[in-house]
Length: 433
Ligand code: ATP
Ligand code: MG
Image 1 (cartoon, protein in one colour):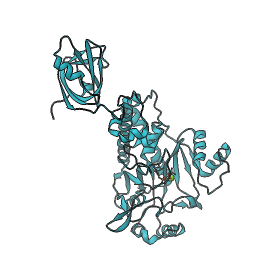
Image 2 (cartoon, rainbow, N blue to C red):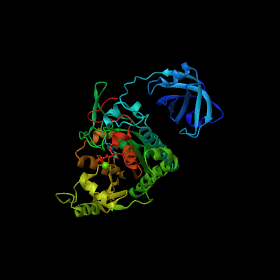
Image 3 (tube, rainbow, N blue to C red):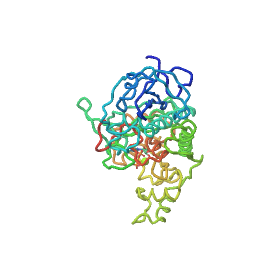
Image 4 (cartoon, rainbow, N blue to C red):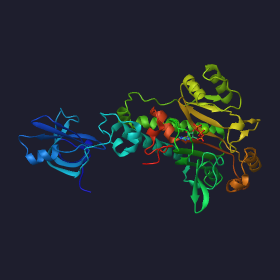
């Protein structure tokens, strides 16, 4: 690569060669400014028409916006320039000319609808706000990975093409695998459990999950990113402690490392959640939801919590909260029932006031009970033999959870739609780009 100066590091008194995009051209008559943008910021390039070569002035001011240029020259102090310095150029080279008919305005002066933004993500992420979301997302994933490593987890990668789904057939995308029926995996659940029984004991994965959900909501994707944790010798309460830490650490690290991005997004006070999230039982939750009068019909033990109910409860609680002690019948077969009451499960959810973020629990590690659980839920244990068999050879008690990365970012940044938290979202209509 040729020598290149990040615009944010250009210093008065030095020479610089910057390369980036034509953000704006301002022609004030005798003087014109070219604003060049790169990933680190923007810099002003000054053209004094009286004293400069006409060809150079033309090269630097007769440019379509968003063209890629390389400018070399002297960096000088200029207190009227947005960054207190400007470049007095001696050469301007057009590296890639842009078509002037831009599908969206990367300067952000003209708002674009979400579908237009998603169709043109390259241009969309030239806008500071959209770019900030993905820089923060990257920081969240870095913080999460580092946290998991600090508590002794090994990062794993499990298959996304599978013979059977986690919860058996529903919400799965079928594919053809060398003439056989296969599916895109909806969760690493069973594989991460197999690994807690391995020599690894404590694992995490950040990877895609695929759900053929038919509905179209602001919080569901058909391809999402799941942050999964699973540990041997943990119970549900210990998994909840980890879950709390992960959510808090992600917020803390963003607050600490993403100051400029948060400022771009308009935060002057970015909230980091408290250490301890309230732990409500399912029974408390339905009682409180019934108390809000948000639902036409009162909830009873065994009902799933409808979205409007969770919304009303979230408004009332006003912070992250757990729901524990769910009825066993509405939690999946791999979640362990409570020893003192088999009708109540060890499963838990963590909710942000706006929506569910996490589901987790202690797992059924006893072979006979696990197989019985499959049968009780109408699933054929034979189809899952690769999983159940390993429970015959020393499977420790274990617990864990799955946290939706896009929901974490979406709630952290108060984004109205989950599609804003993933570069190339997949939904019922959208398969490309
Ligand atoms: P919901 O009831 O909100 O549809 P779920 O209970 O079906 O979610 P789980 O199977 O418990 O989801 O998955 C664990 C976590 O993965 C969820 O709490 C959520 O954060 C995330 N997740 C699940 N499905 C999706 C999806 N379709 N789009 C985005 N995130 C998802
Ligand atoms: Mg769930």
